[in-house]
Length: 61
Image 1: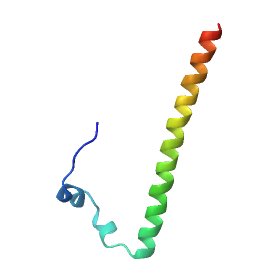
Image 2: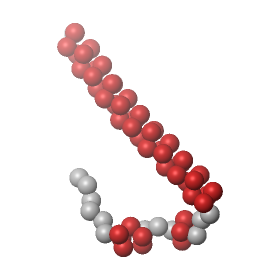
Image 3: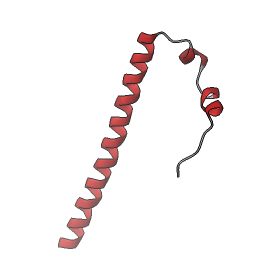
């Protein structure tokens, strides 16, 4: 379920170190976030593939 956050709640959750980061540091952080999202999507896809494989094996038995 999606949680609706106000802008103030989002800002309050950002560490000061991130707010004071340089452009270069923010670019590095953005790359980390992007790769994390890719990993999560890959994990979800893998779980679906395993579930589908398991279901097909059960049906063959």
